[in-house]
Image (cartoon, rainbow, N blue to C red; front, top):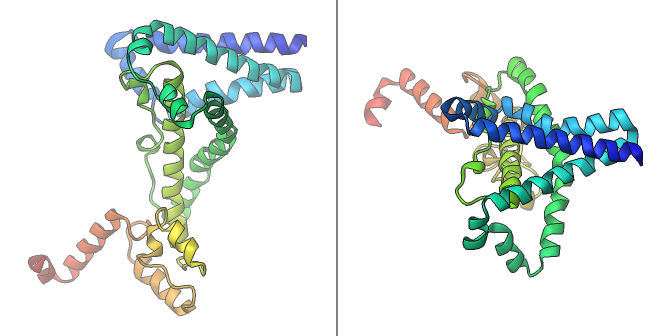
Length: 276
């Protein structure tokens, strides 16, 4: 019990001090704004995520075992509720006079308890998104080097900005920042996976429903992959066509690839440029 209490107090204090430092940066004018902008995009954002989500739990588990881990979780919750209460009090005019996401969704669902239970359950997905982000950082660069997949500037994907949205305070702000980060991680991972699938396995699934369900995330299903009853000669021919002279082995329905292919055709046939 002692380890649980000590860890909870220590982690809550650490998180609140860290958050106070970010609030102070926001008041330091342009210089503070530039630092915050840098921290809101990967790779610096990855450090912020580690500082807020991973480090407290890891420290609690290492220093205090299961009791320390439980205390770290409790400390995270204490810091969360302290900040939410303080932030909403500071912006109490918004709370009183303007609509909010949380109250609107509670009304739509018909139960605050059900809505909040569902919301907090999504925190179980945190480790999955940590692993996806780790794969983006560690695994994908090897594929860029090894098979000429296109590199990505992760800050264009993994970034947060909803803290700048007017009227988004307290509870709503924190959960919107969670979604902000989560969708960026997912979208970058999906883009990388599109490259992998079209490069290594450009074959449609036998299940028509799976093809229909997956075509949103993998547009090449309908725009180039070989039918499931095709031949290996068809697959090899497609690979030669799409990757034989490509500048990078990007999924072949991407707009950048279309522009590159158009430029190659124009070089091969100058008349095509005139016609188009």
